Structures are given as C-alpha cells and as structure tokens.
Length: 480
Image (cartoon, rainbow, N blue to C red; front, side, top):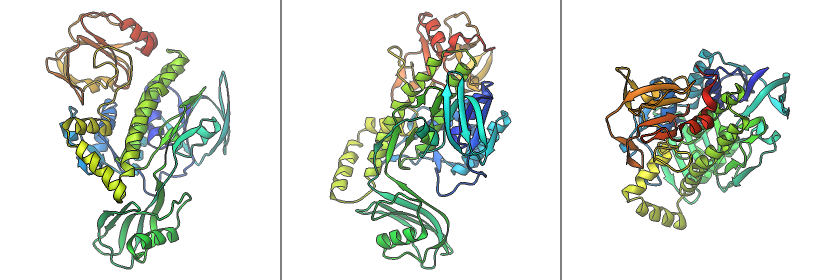
C-alpha cells in the first residue's frame, strides 16, 4: 500500500510526487493517459515565484535550459516592470507544458517515483485507516489520495466537493492547422473578443486563436474552427488537417474545499480559469509545494492530521486573489464601448508606480505571503534568497532548502539548536528587501518552512520559536 496515491501526472501531480519522495514518503502516481503526449494547446510558461520554488529544490536550471526568459507580464495594455522586483528570478520562462512535464517526470524518477499509465479512477471509499480506490485496473488501498486530475476531476466529484465560480460568457478555439489561403500574422480585439494568427513563412501552416460567436462547451471540431474563422475574418483560410485543436472559455471556478478527510485536491482539480497572464502551472506548483511537506509530516506521524487544514487556509485565499485578477483581464479582452471605457480607467489607475508594482508582485507570484498572524513583515512571506556566509563558506538560502526540510537561520542571536531542524549560524550584512513591501528591519533569526515561507522571526530573543516549531515542524522528532 502506498502512503499517498496521486491521480494525475501533470505538472502539479509530478511536483507533489517529487516533494513527497524527497520526504521519504512512498508515493504512487496514476495517470489515465497512456503516453506523455498532450492533446491540444496547454500552458506555455510560468513566472518568477515558480522558478524560485523550483530553485529551492535545485531543478530550476533544467527549465531555464529548456525554455526562454522574457519580460512579458502586463495588465491590460500596461506593461509591468517585474525585473525591478528583488528576486534572482524576476522574469517569465517560456516553455511548453510538455517540456515541463518531461523535466518533472525525470526529477520524480530520480527520486524513485513511478507513474502507472493507462489507469482511470472511477471512485473511492475512505475510512479512518485509509482510502480504497476503484480503478480500471482494479482496487488499491492507500493512506491518502490526492486528485491532481484537472478541471473535470473525478476525485473532486467523487469527494462531493462543490466547484463554484463564474460561468462562461465566451469561448475560444486554439488550433494549429494546414491552410490553403494566405493568412497574415497579427492580433486584434473586436466586440467578440481576441483573435490572433501566427502564420508560417511558407504559407502552408498557421496557428489561430479565435473567439467564437457563440459559447461552445464540447470538444471542438474542424467545422467549429472554420465557422469561427469565417465569423472573425470572413474566411476560414482553407483550414484543414489540424495537428492540435482545443477550446477554452472564460469560466472560472474554485473548489469550496481542498480536502475531504483523507482525500485532497490540487492544481486544476481545485481551481480553473482562462489562460490569461500565464498563471496555471504556477498555481499548481505552489499548491504542490505547500501541501507536500505537510502531508509528508502527517504520514510520518511527525505532525497531527490537523496540519492539513492549513493547506486550504493558505492556498484558497492566495489562489482566489489571482483568479479575481485573471477574470478581470479576461473581461478586458474584447473591444466595445463599455470595455474600452473600463480599459481606459484601468490604464489611468495603472499610471501610478505603486499600482504597477503591486500588480507585478501579484502576477509574478513574488509577493507570495500567507497569514501566519501579526509580527515582523517577514512572517508568512517567501524568504528572500540571500547570499549568506555559513561556516566560513558562501551559500544561498535556497540551497539550504534542497531537501525540503525546515531551516533555522541564526543570524547572530545565539540560539540553541532544535532537534530535527536544519540549523545554521549564518552571517548577512546586506539590506532586507521584500517585493512590493520594500525594505524591512533585519531579523536576528528566522525559521523557514520547507516551502520557503517564514514561520518565525527572531528579534533579539527566542520568544515564540518553540511554539512555531511545534506548529509547523511537529517537534522535528523524526528528522535528522
């Protein structure tokens, strides 16, 4: 019996599998796809905070080598200066989802994770001892079940978790097809929405994004694409032989709960949205990194089951904030009198530097923070990747998080070590600067959770440290 079974081998599922394997948890991954091939257009990149999370595990360079970096974030018609935010990774990485999955699959395999393909989950039953999962290959028993199986999640539905939000008002088709008529590369907005053409130089192939005149919900056909192209451009360009064809809408939904007993959901199974501002992979990876170490500590008996409640408490509001922004930007992707007026008002508001900075922090994820109570500005925020001196040698903070374990940095306070916590006497004489927040007072010590968020800040004493260790590390008894 696996300690944890993950349903879905997309970016979220593979990231979670790696997190659990790092913690020594026996994890099984089930995937209904028989191959690693993806049908239709998928996510094409992610932003700064996601790169930081990958950097914390020592695998960011693999993605940077396979992708391209750029400064491309904006809100409406206003570009955002993400590069001005204090981070080593203040940029966007352009990389196809198929490459993201390939790299994560390789990493997970290095950690001993196996993916079983061609298996569909039909349902489950759970009790105090675990979860009995019904699949197309038979039944299997597991300690915990995590659904990372997409927006139509079987796990979420079987768990009886409501999926609420905004219903679709528009639908769009994304396609790569052969064409027999000339198509000119370009982009425009009209009263329907967004339309884009990327035509190859040979004039034989083109990629289209086209907004449909009526909302479509089913799997699209070539006839659907031709009809949408004629409505938008007056011709279908002789479109034929599609190599990819998919449909997305502006619907946005979020699960009311991310957990039902021993069953949890993450990634698109927990939240879906239109592909505006490139948030999909980043939100899923953040879910996985937040959940992984918590679930591992519960499985190992290091922390009580109630630690899992903090997963929704932290990730639901953080994701909801992003979804609200995505819905707003999606609504601006049309051209009519009302929308033009809204766009003009937003553009005027975005002339303020503070507004642009706040938006850059949100969309890049670099303002990531969880509500861990009152205290120092660092509390609950992502730890900056400082250049430290530890034991006479230089080391980055994120290099200390490679094993996904809690880290206690003593920056001159003279703390006693705590059992099972990776403790380091470190020196740093630079300025402490947080994205959006700006400069903050230098702490004398910090406790960093395995996900890179600050769980406790020392300001000259160890007051509250033992409570923070008990809350987030379970005492650390089983760690070395």
